[in-house]
Image (cartoon, rainbow, N blue to C red; front, side, top):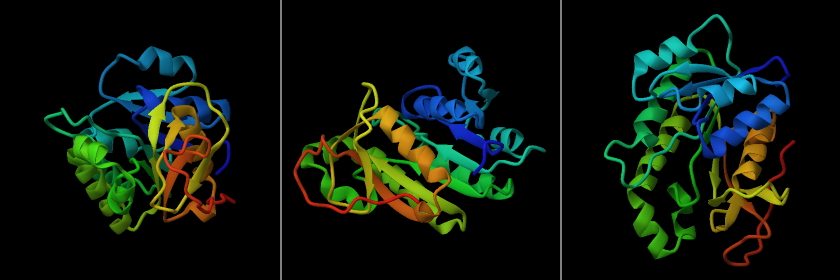
Length: 225
C-alpha cells in the first residue's frame, strides 16, 4: 500500500471507525467514508475524508459509492449493531459490502468483529456470551462470508473497547483463548498496519492490550511484516 492508495471505510461515524479515519488521514492516505446520515460529515470532511451517504443494507447505495473511476485498494468495515437493534447490520450489511467489493475489484477487505466471534467464543465469560450472543452469531456469519468470498482478507477481533488515548501496548495473536481490553485508537493502529502487511493476509487475529488481559495466559504475539 502506498500513500496514493484509496481506502473505503464503513463505520467512520464513531468508535474504532473514527479512529481509523484519523489514523489513515495522518498518513495522508485517501479515504472515502460511507455514512448513513449527515451527523458526522463535517467532522470527517474537516480531516480530509470524502463522505458519501448511503446504507450498507442497500446494495444500490453501495454500488454507487464503491464502483467508481477511482480504484479502491481496500475496504475496512467496523460495521456493527447492538443486541437491542431490531435489524442488525453485522451480517447483512457486511455481506453487501463484501459482495460489492468483489464487483469493484477491491484488493483487500479488513473486517473488524470482536473476541467471542466464531472459534474465539470460548474466551468469553458465560455472562458476556449471554449478553452478546445475538450479535456474535451475525458477526460469525459475516466472517464466514468473507472467508468464502475469494477476497484477500484480514479479520481483526478486538477485546473490550475503551476510549482513552492509545497505549502502544496493543498486540495481535492467533490464540483464540485470549481476552482483555484495548483502546479504540490502538485497534485502529493495528488495523491500519494490516493494510500493508502480507503476513496478515487471510488471517483471523485477536487484538488486545498486553497489559489489560482478563486472565494471564502465555500466548504467541502475531508479527506484522
